[in-house]
Amino acid sequence: MLNFLKRNRQNKTFAALATDMHCHLLPGVDDGSSNLQETVSCLKTLASVGFKKVHFTPHFQANYPNEEEDIKRRFETLKKQLSEKDDGCLPEIGIICGEYRFDPRFVRRPGVDKVLTLPGKRLLCEFSLHFNDYMPVEIFAEYLRLGYKLILAHPERYPYLGIHSQEVEKMKEMGIAFQVNVLSLNGFYGEAAKQKGFDYIKAGMVEYLGTDTHNMRYANALMDTAENKEVQKLMATHTFLNSEL
Image 1 (tube, rainbow, N blue to C red):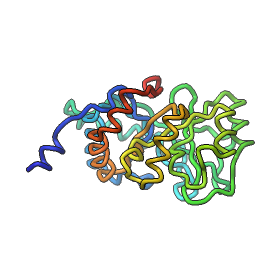
Image 2: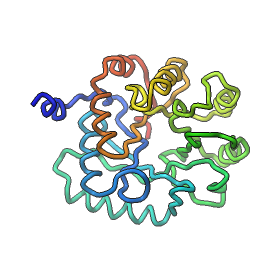
Image 3: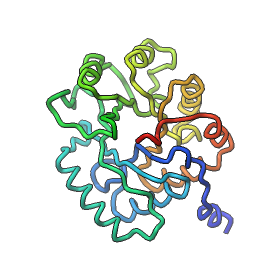
Image 4: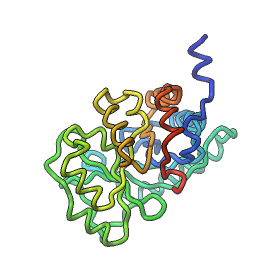
């Protein structure tokens, strides 16, 4: 009974963010949501913890070699389906974007391939979570030259990147923004990622937070994170740029 009440209690911890700019809730295209009902349930959870708008960022990488035009068509279908199921508990559905892995096996060429960006020509990118023998400084530089603003997803999750490493210093010198996963701050990915997430934020190196919600396991963890006192304190004392998206 207590667990039921907890799962139905709203805690608007993330209301100041307004926008979730990182999730995998377009059904059936990557390792995220598998069907419409799961997407609806996850979106309702996002709204319950304070998010007013959600942008969708499916994977673009070697394991999920999605094509932009197909993803756009799927998103339009999803929006119609969600409008039919909206009972007033869903957040605003934002735009279709992408999370692009910068990997030599799957590289979108700046100025040639039409990437799906967040508002303001912001491109969400990521590295491999397990190893890194590829730091695409030249590709970063070319995207920046063409007017894109780069956001690196979940830097706290890369075990090979230290907060004071030369790679991190170079990216910040180039003006690359960082987005930490809120679930990292509750230990969802382990203690090392949790500590690095807080360290990046306290060092003033993080411009955005994202949920990176994939399914209801993530959504349930998000409700727990919203009740974490340390996370609540951080949200009350730090400002992020999500509301600009």
